[in-house]
Length: 332
Image (cartoon, rainbow, N blue to C red; front, top):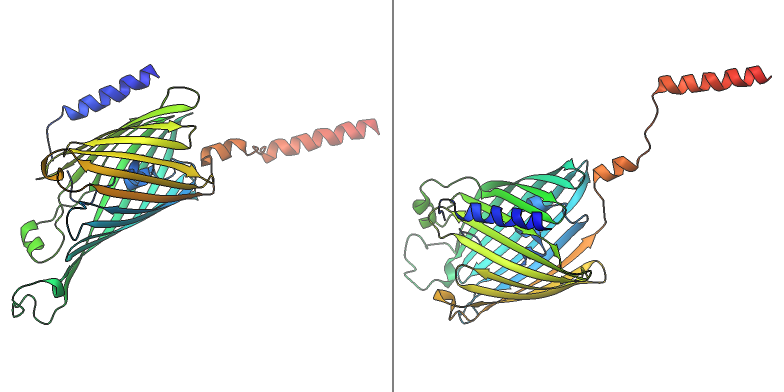
């Protein structure tokens, strides 16, 4: 436990002392603490079962209309240490609506008895929509004439690596690989403009007693031309079924959450986010709720291979039969 704590601290310090870069270009969620696929698709297969989650988030309650995000994700085992996953979210802010759909592939490589390396790649499609019917302006503008909405679609890709060692994991990746050329022109036409994004995380689960565990979790997001986003959180897990969590984000935001596993397969989590400074201070807070289900179970392909009896080489099987025949012939 002490050795893992050292790795946790060293890894975090080394990354945070690196060259400052910059974070957020898509809606964030705090519920990756118990739904890690929403942080990185490379987490697929890390829970030993297939799963799917539904998430709803309403930001800045003092504003009308308030931003809303609907999210769904799933991942499942397809054999030979391979996993598929999918995610979709819809983000709505007044006349602006953004949709994202993602398909992912993850491969799980066993390095030692309890050490694994996950490699994941994914592709995403984005659609940006602006409802022109709700705009109060000059209806004779050539941009609006004979249109009720502007809609554009584009594509991107990402990858990441995650190392697992029992309850410890650390990962690095690029959720957004392709940078948009002429970003300002693209945005003015109602399309998406992407900046390259880098993401680092580190986490470990410590046993405080036979029934209580502590899981610290740190996430750093760096995006060109945007502020660095840093999450520092801690979750107390009771009996491996219920949890209380607290999260601080360096954009002067604090989140408190509670959740648990119900009926062995269903998970429910709720968090309330409040601003403690800056623009978030008078936002009115944010509600987020997630409902999840786990289905099936698998211990990993490497475990099944160990359990399968090894067949003898046919050459040696024939030799065994010959010996049995000779022994019977001598007795007769």
